[in-house]
Length: 421
Image (cartoon, rainbow, N blue to C red; front, top):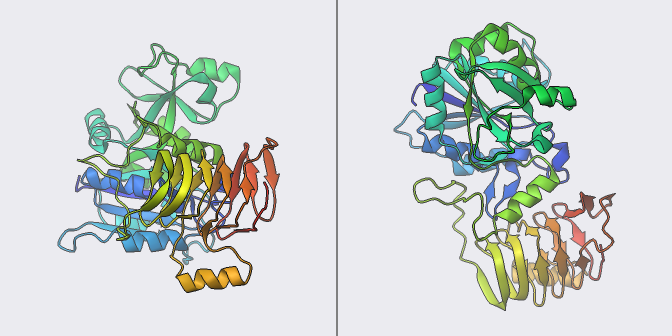
């Protein structure tokens, strides 16, 4: 693995995840109570022995940079690193990245300067656990210039992804980006199904690829491609040997509010599809050294609770309670994600807020929350009701947004006492 270098794409504006991306890049969005999305690809790399990692960043990148700097300080006695490559102006290019392929192209001199034999490109905003040894083994054994990770999906989800067909040797012979026409879907169906599920008859690109150094250099310098999936890969199948590696484990692109919400709630299942902790391969994150959660009375069922939380005599069901969450007496929270806070308030600060008529950071007494995502540092006043009882599917307000029926309270928002959504 020492001859492989990983490049993680930090994402663009992330408009489909707004307002969670109002102040942060997609890979910096909190998930699972204590992690951030960027922890997933970095952990997969480190467990595979790939410890030379670049993270390409551009939009709303400060919190992502802070997390990377505070979390991934690798052993100075190795050649490993997790290094940020922020968008920069150069004599050759003074503009922003124009797409994923352009982002890699603009940083090619930094990447090739490390003299890798293979370059692994990874998205920074997907939820999955992959044995990258198996992926790289497919790449080496096939003699491919480029290898893509592909996931079997059913027809009803197929048009959300780039779809492909492989020949009997595993070589990519057809690739179409997010096809919607029935004829295209019929032509791309695979028989027999490549996975265990009989209805998963399409091979979807996971956005994970590995290039031989020479192939990456030739493809990027030889074209004006801006996007890897839309522009570069359709060209590559005609000029290079492009192969596929079929992955049948759990994988979710959490790029929309609905997908992100559902992925988090599934973490509360008795047998969740994804586990952040496995004894031989945990997902790493910032070791914050917070105190254990403190719970006084109430009832918690199928709930994930992060460190540093204080929950007082409350009812919480099928929810994620993030780090430093303060939940007041008699609150009722269900099917929701409470992201927590970036800091603790002192008792004097909380008292001063109350004297000014401002709720302290956290969830106040007698609050009811159902079907919501409450971003960090939110202040939810006493007796507020956040339930979308009218079933609104889409709405925008100064204090909240609703997407696919899910209420999202943006970071640092103040919800007054008694407010009803």
